[in-house]
Amino acid sequence: MAITSAGVGSGLDIESLITKLVTAERSPTETRLTTKQSVLNTQLSAVGTFKSVLSTLQTKLAALKSDGDLMTLSATSSDTDILGVSTSSAATRGNYQVEVLSLAKAHKLASTALAGADTSLGAGDVTIGVAGKSFTVTLGDTQNTLADLKNAINKASDNTGVTATLISESGGTRLVLSSNETGADNTVTVSSSLLGFTEQQAAQDAHVRVDGYDVYSASNSVSDAIDGVTLKLQKAEPGTTLSLDVALDTDAAAKTVQSFVSAYNSAIGTMASLTKYDAGTKTAAVLNGDAMVRGAASTLRGILAGAGASGGSYQYLAQIGITAKADGTLELDSEKLSDALANDSAAVQKLFAGDTGYATQLDAAIEKIVGDDGQVEARNDALQARLDTISGQLDDLDARMVKVEARYRQQYTSLDTLLASMQSTSTYLTQQLSALSKLSSSSSSSSG
Image (cartoon, rainbow, N blue to C red; front, side, top):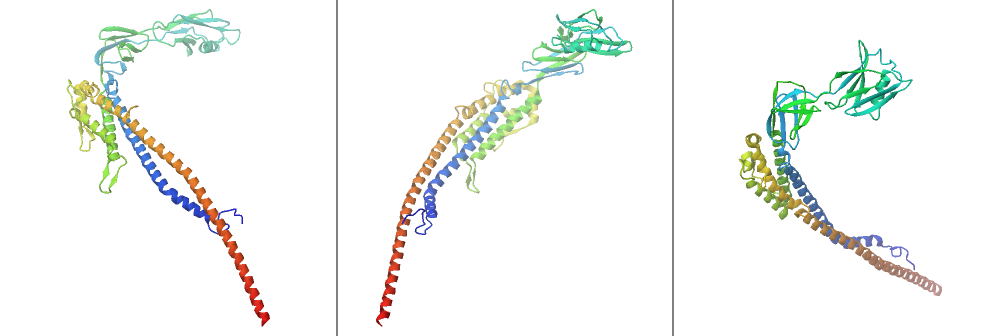
């Protein structure tokens, strides 16, 4: 008897039986491997969190190092209505006396007054020069009004730096030509038989006196008088001497230190959370007892417990208002920090940014942990290798279970065939016995 589907011959639910047997054989190994896989992925994520908080702290440390935000200088003017000021990283500390004698002005020429903007000028060329460079516009027999000339100048592709405008006043309409740049070198010239011009405003350089030295500039933004400082001339006040101070930006410095303290506390708190053990619930964190994390926390605390610099007014964090609490995090006394910055900001900078400064030491220690060849990379590689091994084992398990299922299917198909054959034989024998029984009964009735 041919069996085309498992269980058809015997009536047994062989498909369900095979599935349950394969599942029972797979389950212990699969559970063990997936549990390990889950633990390793959790550890990998925790190591990523550990690296992230240390990398964030390292970013904040960069602002405390020699070329960071802690070194930022700001400049102040005693009268910003006359003199504004800004600084760049090239600025150095100092105090300067500044007098603004004159502002830079753009050269302006005004044409003779005409009846209106639509007054025809006739055909011809108008050549305009600025700082030795010139361009020419040409008016034809049509479109040759004063307004047309203005538009032609402003739209000229080779315009060398002139803006044309129309000004209407009681005496008529004038075409005004203005240099786009201030300064004595940017004078405007006009050559044309169509229209005459007179000077409305002379080209002029700015004149500023810094600590008694005369400085001239084509612009009212003077960046070459004091290294790293840009003077923004607002108005001329001859005879008025202003005070310009370039000093540490204490507000920015305080914010930089506060940002470091916050990042450090976040790192210490995260490391404590990743390695803690809750005695009440008897629950261990994912990296409980981990030597790398515990060692990192110990290293950071050890650095801050020691001296940060030598030869300055401050050698320890406590001297500028930063103290350690019982849980290893830091507490900042903002008022004490402000006083330290005001009293000796250079010493505060050295405390962090010197060769043995806190920022320098911490950055070097963190780099060994999270750098390209650091401890975190080695740990990640090890965890990933173990995950790859488990992934391979799961693939092997899948392949083995295919063979196991095939073996069970072969065995139970043979059993199904055997049972079907036995059932067929049983049915035949039952039929034959029944026939014999009927024949015997019939014979007995006849003889009687």
